[in-house]
Image 1 (cartoon, helix red, strand yellow):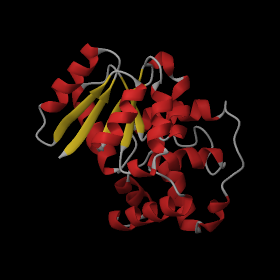
Image 2 (spheres, rainbow, N blue to C red):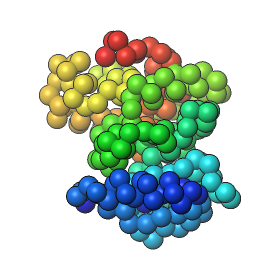
Image 3 (cartoon, one colour):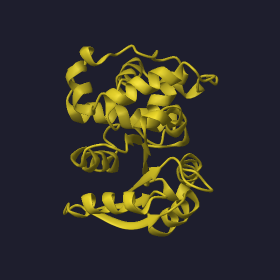
Image 4 (cartoon, rainbow, N blue to C red):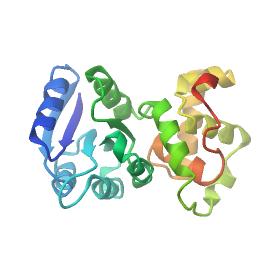
Length: 225
């Protein structure tokens, strides 16, 4: 059972998400928060698998709430999906840097919302890779990049290759097909990279890859997948 916490300042939005998710046998909405501070408190109390986090909320916003959840060692297993709208795209890159496992637009289809929760809960892939690549590609070029993590030097040539594909939004199965590996081997490579780079999840690997210059914005278009 995947336990979900809803964080949105609009009661009707939360009710809509609850209705969609509660119809699924493997999803359980365990709590609701109307602002970022409440989301952090409930995350610590309930330890959900996934938090659906609105980015704009009164008081503590979703970005800072995500940062606090991601920075709490007790909440390592909690994944955050940021809910945004296209006019808030500037927040996306910051949200991923803060520790979000992915993001969705608020007008997403119910089936995509359900799929997203399941995918992020298992830590298998980013949300909507094509959208993720497009937005990160655009905004990665706007931010000042910190010095590359020295941990990158610990990666093998194969691991750096896998890292570039993760950053391109590819799933383990897609990476396996691209590199002619078994899915299990691809998953092992990703796990080792996350350990070496001390990454919380795949989203953090994407951010690290862009910031370190391992991958450049726009290098992998949808047509090259």
